[in-house]
Length: 110
Length: 113
Image (cartoon, each protein chain N blue to C red):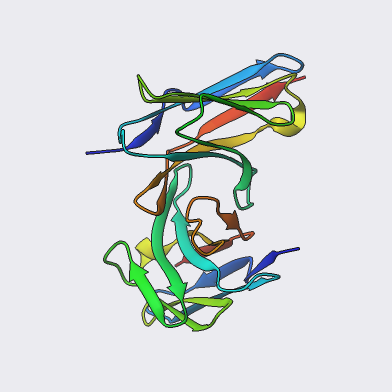
């Protein structure tokens, strides 16, 4: 079946390094993607989104890349900080509903 | 600015008891409203969504129901809770016509014992 999934369930990085979190999707008709950050015990927070007519979008310290050829989405976090430690979800707009992947836990080592 | 309120933050209920979780949104009109459930260490599962008062779409068959008695109020209910209803419940909203960009509440951790 169709799914939105993540390549790695956990990611550990050194403070100050760049982080890359990956996501694969299988529905080639999906036209909108979002990354969320969820800290323990809290609701997900919107980070950045991208439409399928774009390949790249940048925010503050974050960049989302979309490769429609291989149906791959990534979130890059520059100069990772301890406050970036959280679970990151990619989500796909599929027919008007937001479908979430399972999440990647990012751990930042001081 | 828009805000979303969800309560209670935690809830412990016995099996077979009823449930009512409430969510309200401020600062916007005619929002789309959603209920998601998140099992420990897993992703979010869409339970219900609503595009207007009294309009509820159910995504999965289950022991739960939802209602939208007012434009900015969304309620998740159950007549008799099951152990499997335990989880982290999240309410969310999006602008009418913009289904993708959701804004989430702080969640309710429900434990059914």
